[in-house]
Structures are given as C-alpha cells and as structure tokens.
Amino acid sequence: MSDYVIVTDSSADLPASLVQELGVEVLPLSFTVQGKTYHNYPDDREMDPKVFYKMLRDGEMATTSAVNVAEYTNMLEPFLQAGKDVLVLAFSSGLSTTYQSSVIAVNELSEQYPDRKIYTVDTLCASLGQGLLVWHAVQEQKKGKSIEEVRDWVEENKLHLCHWFTVDDLHFLKRGGRISAATAVVGTMLSIKPVLHVDDEGHLISMGKARGRGASLTALVDHMEQTVTDVDTVFISHGDCLADAEKVAADVKKRFGTKDVVINNVGPVIGAHSGPGTLALFFLGTKR
Image 1 (cartoon, rainbow, N blue to C red):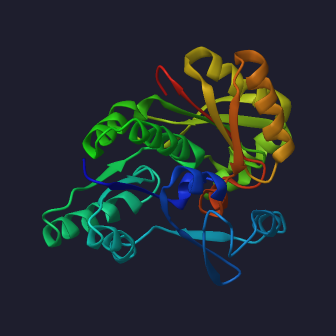
Image 2 (cartoon, rainbow, N blue to C red; image 1 turned 180 degrees about the horizontal axis):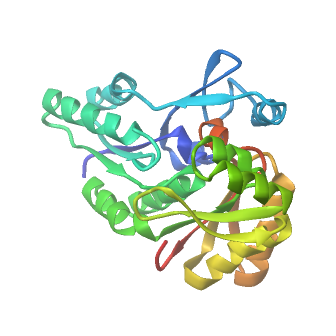
C-alpha cells in the first residue's frame, strides 16, 4: 500500500497538539483585521485567539479569504515529489470557495504527477466538525485502510457529522446576512439565543431559539441526545468562552459517559463571522 498524507485546512480548528498527534498537514487560511492580514495556523503563531476576540469585542471588523489554487499547489506538490499520495479534506463548499480551489489544484497536479493518487473531499463541515471528521479519517488510516477506502469512508459518513451551535451576539450573524437586522435587535433585547446547525449542503441554518445563554447551551446537548451514535469522542469549539465549553463538556460526560472531549477555540476564519461567545458541539449521529 502506498504511503499517503491527509491534508486539511485551518478552518478545521484542530489544536496544534492534536495536529501533531494525528500526523495531518494543515493549510492555513487567512484573515484581515486592522488592515493587516494574518495566517490562521493551528499553533496561533501569528495571533492569539484571545487577542482576536478582544478586537471583535472592541468593535473591530475582521474579514477572511479562501485558500487560492496556488497555495494548495505549493503545499501539496512537495508530498507528490516525495512519492506520497494525498487526500485533501476541505472546508465546506457551502461556506467557502476553499474546496473549489482544491479541486482545481488536484486536477492540475494529477496531470503533472500521473503516477500519484490525489483526491479531495468536500467535507461539508466547519470548525471542529471538520476537525472531528479528519480525526475519524486518521483512525481509519491507522487501521491500514487505503487512501481510497478512507476517502470513501469520509464521503459515506460526512453527513453524519453533526454540528450544533449557538452564538452570544446576534449582530455578527446579522452582518454576515444569516439573520435580519430586526431579528438581531429584538433577539438582543429579549436575550434570545439562536440554536443553529450545519445542514446537508454545508450551510448554517437556524433550527430554533432559546431564552438565555444557559438554555441555549442545554439545547445543544438535548439535540445531541436525539441523534448521537458515537458517544466516545466529542469535539467542542468556542469563541473565547472556555467556561461555557467546559460546562457543555461536563453535561455531555454526565449524560452519555463520554470519555474523550476535545475543546479548542473557534479560529479567526470562522470566528470573524460567528463572533465572541460562539459555542459549538460536534459528534457522529444518525443524521445532521
């Protein structure tokens, strides 16, 4: 069986320690704040998430950019030159053009390296939902599965990767066009917190409302209870609200006996659009 590398991008929000443990390669996406562009590396070498979220709380605007074809090519080509095959697990096409860039790069490189296997998968996932899918892909790789078998496993299971999340400040979703200005104003006045998920097309969809922060956090775990199939490994990401993430983790462990809960920040690429106080819960379930 040929040697192959699993590549993802930094919207997967995997912590640097887990990236190293899994042996995956991560292509950093970029974000711009205060007129300067930074790369979103897993080790946060260019900006600490706490600094980023403080900027947002202080009123700064952040914008993001998808990975272009050249960036993908420059990252993938050294592996091909070294005789390795490559499986790319890309950020949801419903939220970014990153996957489309990977398709063009893979097609071009396949022509240049006809003896190598190069595949890319639209994960239809985001944040640690994408990260959890990558984690499962590596577990399949460790079992000795071929690159095609892991690719097929991801394709067959990606719509079982459940994303449930809530936000603390509705104005970030309003700015991104996810909700109306009137909804944001009324919701803020009444302390209404939306409960959202990522649907089968990889888009963010509002699925309900909760009155107050505590109720919205409980609602995430309630949704998990309805569909979860794998309680062993659960991922949680947060927009600089670690205490809330730990509260949800404790609830998950109490309800389901989950042993392995990975918690990490929502990176700047997604956090620019969801804002401080975002809390997201990810697990495998019967359906999204």
